[in-house]
Length: 78
Image (cartoon, rainbow, N blue to C red; front, side, top):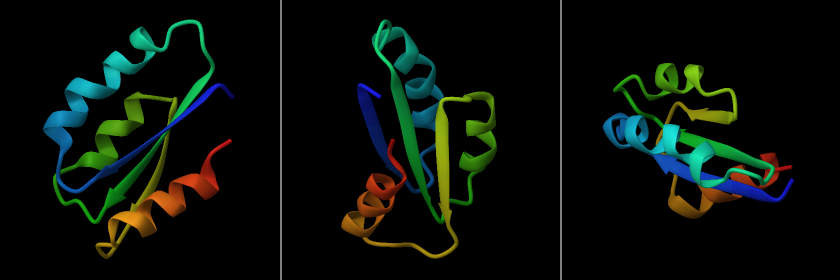
């Protein structure tokens, strides 16, 4: 794995809808993964990511702090 991208999102589906399709374009030629922490969103963020197989999603039922979320992503990263 060349690059692990950690994204923390709380009800940011509209931004992810723009961001996620661009990642493979920008990361062309390198092996990458995206770890998305859905921090207790209620806007359908988890459903949006189903169309992006390179996204590993961790869904928090209750909101966590920023550092806790990134630590979860680091543990999941390849």
